[in-house]
Length: 222
Image (cartoon, rainbow, N blue to C red):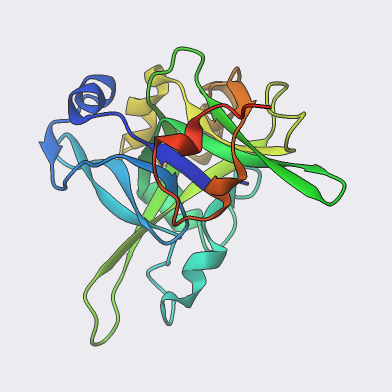
């Protein structure tokens, strides 16, 4: 799964990496993003639009927003068929922007957080889905989920799952609203993703979402 991540690259870097044409939010660094918080995303709307969605999907048909905390991730193996995700998979795909993510390695009673990022240090995008929920007396709630898959060799020593990180050449295909073919979309998730990451242990202070500063991603000093 993916339960915490970091996004701290500046706007100029994001515009270059994701061909952003419209900006609808303020970009500020966050080194310890937790579920239900707003996250930076790119959707296709007359070009690539940078905005914010709440992390934790609330399907349009949901009775209320209570599902959000349970739908922070969608498994790539079932995303095309599961009722919570199948409509968004065909119609509402997005890029969720990040610089790295955290996973915890279990060693007996201990859980040690590790930080994963690209070897280049460049920002990247998780494959994501989004939807809009409207309550009777509430404003529209825009939310998203991160698609995960079985871990590759660079992540397996720490955790058996990892988020799908899309290669830059797969971004346009993933965002294309005309692409509604499940086979093609599943091929992007399996063939268009990054597999090699670098990682290192970090301080357990990042276990608390209240700690949100560059120290969260610093390598642990033994």
